[in-house]
Length: 103
Image (cartoon, rainbow, N blue to C red; front, top):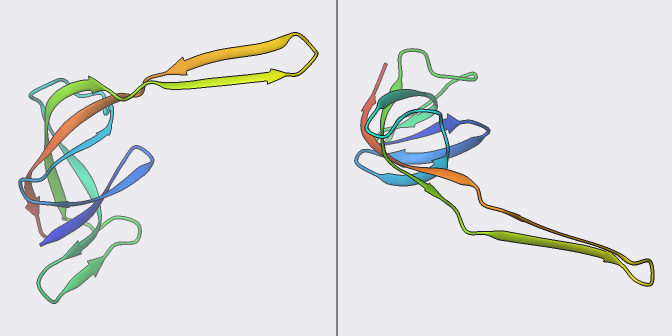
């Protein structure tokens, strides 16, 4: 059994006890929260919501806060004495799927 959930602006295909990385959700480490389910699939039955399935929930537990790999950017214009450098590290959370509740 698997489910497709939405967190923030991204969709994830998850199964029970799966651990995955997501953008920061605003929940503290150790907290549990529920996510909306877009699609729920059993062995040979698929339920699709519009947009979410009513009654279906995926419980997630926050395991760890961490930061992603540093991304460096650079742009310049030749012969114009213009150059800019920047860097960015995305804030991430490691999440574990505790349970998948069917409607």
